[in-house]
Amino acid sequence: MQSMFMKARTALETKGRFASGAVPEHIADSWRRCLTHGLDPVGEPLDADIGIQALRETRQKHEQLLRVVRPELELLSTQIAGTNHMTAFADNRGVVLDAIMDTEFSLTKCAQTVRCGTIWDEGHRGTNALGLSLYTGRTSMVTGSEHYFSSHGLVSCVATPIFDSQGQIVGLLDASSEVAARQFHTQALVELAASNIENRLFIEDHRSNIIVQFHPRAEYLKTQSVGMISFDEQGSILGANRRAAQMLNGLEFSAMSKFRDLFRTDFSSNLATMRSGETVRLVDWLNSAFFARIRLSRLSSGPSSQNLALNLPSTYEVPGLPDAPVFRDEQVLNSLKLAIRSAKMMTPQYVIGASGTGRTTFAQAVHEANCPEKPLIAVDCRAANINAESEGLTGELFGGDENSRFLIETGGMLVLEDLSGATGRASEQLAHLINRLLQHKSSAKWAILVTENEPPKEQAHWSKFVSMTFAKLRQLEFQLPNLNERTDGALIAVSMMSRLSTDHQLSRSAIDALFDHHAPNNFYELEKLLTTLAIQCPATVLRAEHVNRYILRNELRDAVCPRCKGNNAKEAKCREINRVLKSFPRVALELTSAAFDDSKGGPTQ
Image (cartoon, helix red, strand yellow):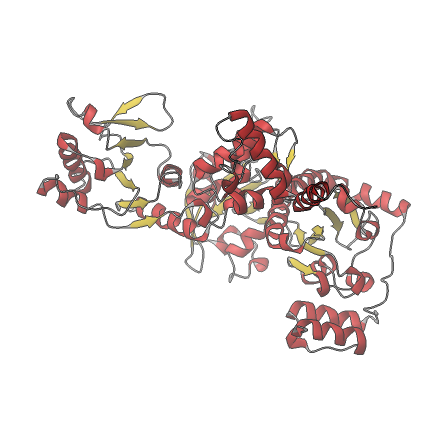
């Protein structure tokens, strides 16, 4: 039975009209524009091409832009999981200037049409992601039959515009594939790549100006999501990135010309503070508060004029590096935001999760966002009894090589691991310490975070004082899900593999095989699987067939026949045979047929 969309599609092709309500609004609008252009949805689109000479001249004109785009295009191509895909860059007319495609995609019909020099606006190619994004100025996704021309129906594509500091489109990024299931994952990568390019272009364009970087959250000043505005020495606005305009939405940003038009404070006094490397607090005229600091300092006229002050890490660094934990799951991300806010208010909190769910990483992220310059001390409360005979407690100092005595005067973050396991004198010491910290009897501020495998329960061996004190810590609780319940498992796998091996990359099919067939419940299990692949597989790009070959499925791990059982070598060979038969059912059928023919005296001729 045809869906409402396919009925509308059929009507478009046969009658030249369709029911708008059955088609996504942005696609319906594009189809109507294509009908206005007189395009035939079942015909072949015009193969519009600007020609070799014009392509060469256009590339020369955009040489600086292409130098910035190419690395991001290459990175995007490696980040898109699986095979059969292409990434491309087009100018602000929709002319493709650069493209990267894998071998599988290069053999498709689409690869012959999406080549450098071709024009992909709606007037020539109908509804497509590049043309739609160029028309709307927004990210566009066009999947399969949503394309205006039926000949484009096998391809799905995502495109997003790239803006300069004046808000003008300077180009577009596109990712296309014949595998539609990847598109939502791909959209995030394409948008991130475009944002990276915009920020790099902005910095290059305003390198000699004062670039102020701002965000509502101080800890986000080091991330890709910051707003950036360029000023001269008098506080006149020279340009801004797209994120800045989004953050200051409601102020008619495009009509503003001075720092004072945006914020309720003086430019010169804040500039002096920011130039000293400090972060300031700015409030706009709608009473929204931001933290700000200088991203790039203007070259001075003094002796040190050859040095450029870089007060922050690059805003366009690649995400998902080994030392950057992944928090993309909605539940985990919301918990992290609340935990950071709670830590800033010195509110105790519990983080509950099974072993390997990332409790320690979660605690470190809270500390990094809250007080990175102060110590993060973790006390294993189950083992605290060993050190309880000495005066005071010792714990692991993150970032250090040795255990560190707890010094209350320093302030920072105290992580109590498995508090329910504290017994004897250690539990009494902990209770006295916690009581003192909660009553703020010291000028130093300590955020307290407790990690447990299970929801906290009062222990029978605790004294009344210990029970009452520990109960004060249960003001907030955050539950960490198991790895196979998180929606960001794929990103975690990619990040973990990049830490384990710089020689291997996970494709989408490999990630799907890992989670579908092996369902790692925690980080330890995932790391074991990835380590096995990194050690045994010689291929650089890991795919599903590599996962199936080098990692035994759980149901095959003990599947050996009685004849081989007891002999390690025979058991290994038996499991390998079972794996092949399980992975390639056609082979199993042929072997079974051959065995049947042999039993009947050989195949008939």
